[in-house]
Length: 208
Ligand code: AMP
Image (tube, rainbow, N blue to C red; front, side, top):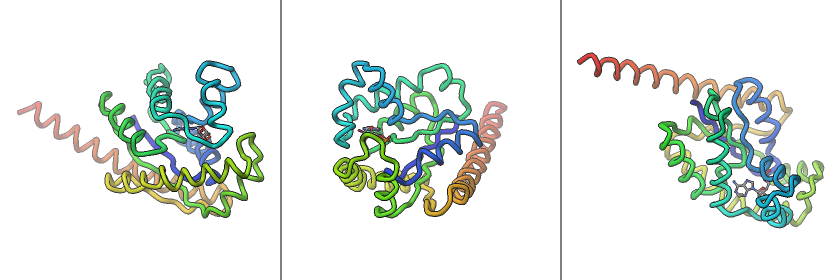
């Protein structure tokens, strides 16, 4: 199963590009932000716990974030899916390590991370224009700062594993998606070749 992670500061267009990736590649889109917003609307225990943190632009605990992703990946649709697209997760190194372990336990791994690059000023402009309830100036500033401190180190983490593909997130949606799809296609080609080589080797070994 393919596992794509989409990275980028808030306002980088992750949500829009995720929808297009989902449509083109038939991936299951797993967005921790969407799951948390649904929990808030449903007034579930999780939603009540997360609401104040989300409104003030703070991250929920790693334990909860990892827990909801782990649970989501156990659903039948996720098990059957040929690919999963993770959006908003991992947000920091601890979550990335947890994800790696979670996938490894199922014999899976991260296929690639697409990093949408958009300058801070553009991201702020887009967020203010979007006007979601947690898009106040104060909350935006906090989330963007968190991103620099907690999420930027993740870029290196993915790079060290040769999984990082950065894409210019400026321009019209279709142009950005063309770039995104190109890096995904390339990475999937490599993943297929590796899988084929691995199968060949396994066959060869089993024949010996
Ligand atoms: P997003 O839609 O990804 O911007 O997420 C909205 C809010 O949900 C964030 O500001 C956090 O409060 C919370 N959140 C989403 N994903 C995570 C995560 N992986 N770890 C911690 N908090 C998260």
